[in-house]
Image (cartoon, one colour):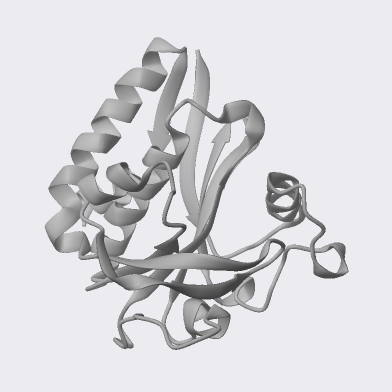
Amino acid sequence: MSILELLHTRTFDAEMEQLRREYSDQEWPNGCSADKFDAVSSHVVVSVDGELAGMVRLTRRPPSVLAAWAIVESYLPDSREATEATRAVVARKWRGMGLYKLLMSESTCLCHRWGVPEVVATIEPDFPLRGFLERIGFRCVGRPTRFRNPPEGEVAGQVIVQEPAVALAAALNVRASCVRRLATGGLSVYSSIFHEAALA
């Protein structure tokens, strides 16, 4: 059975940069997907037998990634204690297996352990997994507004907010479902994030 491992790291390395670049067919500015927020963020990463399969960036305010990306006045909450979830990506070969759901549920566990009161993100209005995000406690705030989103340029972004303490039970249920599904596909899940959160 293959091993699927989840962990969080403060290091944004070349393998992560390549995965993010390959996620989009658009040209990245200067040919590089890294930005100034990567070095001050944590990254929840998932790998399969050592091969990077997906990741999401968690940035504890300040700074605010989304405020820097906002083109016009947005509906971002102004809490300095919030954490922002951005740059979620799953490698093409591993899509359709629930890894995005696993990453976001693990991120909820991690933010709960950190004592984060709110997780803030943006999604495009027609994002296909919007219903899943609502199931783990994300709610829409305001209406879609314009954000910069390299390499796509300007996009419509709907601000969504989650309270990890309230969402934890739902996130754990999603996580358990993902683990069962992956096991049927021959993947055994090990998570240092979940283990640490369970012991906290």
